[in-house]
Image (tube, rainbow, N blue to C red):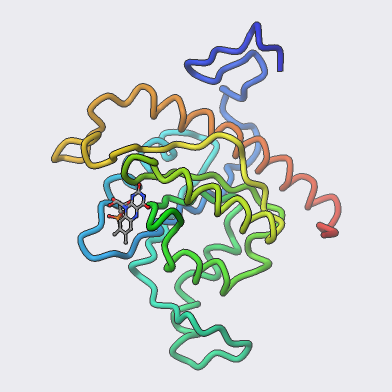
Length: 214
Ligand SMILES: Cc1cc2nc3c(=O)[nH]c(=O)nc-3n(C[C@H](O)[C@H](O)[C@H](O)COP(=O)(O)O)c2cc1C
């Protein structure tokens, strides 16, 4: 990219895909990782989903991990009860062209609920872009995101560069869940979603031409 034409405030450049996509919208699965009692996650994921659904290049499916109860013990022949839990999420991951993970930071990493979802699946992640919206205390969840980059590389997913992070997240939103000063976060979300759209279209086109060989 020519840095002389790059607007650092918005991430926009003359090459950024700001116009509606001509192709069919990409299916974007937004995965809310926290299933903690009293969680803050819905405030963050609702904010992000409102940004993503405002675009024409994505259709959004919000997957809330509080709605599934996958066990930590993996199995190649899960019992009916576990197949029922997988039935809530696996087809939605498979149908998605791209993912955004909304994750808090717990003890310098991401929640166990998310690791369980990731490890129960394999093909569903492959050759698809993934972006991250993180939140937490002073770190803004960035250490959780760096761990997730390593995990998704193993799964042949493409983690995009830009993220959205909320440092001391509770103080950034009002009681109605509105961001008090959203311009920076909105610009970050736009940059990340533009990158996911580019990779999502590129990978969808490539996979329609030839199966991923990885
Ligand atoms: C078990 C636990 C560990 C945490 N560890 C960290 C941490 O390492 N770094 C940080 O910035 N915040 C940490 N936090 C703060 C959370 O990121 C913050 O409370 C966040 O809102 C939790 O997301 P949730 O409410 O959606 O579950 C921790 C919170 C919990 C419950």
